[in-house]
Image (cartoon, rainbow, N blue to C red; front, side, top):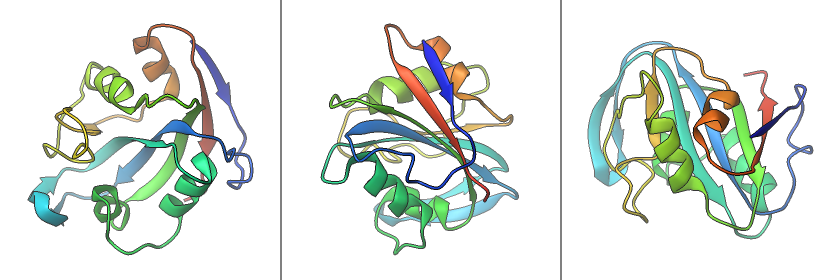
Length: 159
């Protein structure tokens, strides 16, 4: 696996091509959150990885820009983004949907916990696309779990 770390930047660096991404979020205090039709769950303090794909118009740039701005509550991740800090974005350019593979790889990391079944996984057979960790992760932890060539870029955010 290759890992390219990008400097703090705006989302102009992220391309308008299709790809897969991970949002790394930090929740500072335990919070009970109602997530649309999934119901209510208690989210503990800590670090969260959310895996998604951006295969439509505007690709990664459009999808990740949406995740970074204030939004109406539509997707599962919107409910958590409204109450946590988005710290980093990890991404790769590919027309292939890698989100389920990446979610499974993250699930295999030490300390991974599922805070809510079905989160972000309503269009696949995964148990979740959201994982909780007590510690900060780096994209190299994900890269080490994956098989085959894949360049994971890292964009650090100021928030």
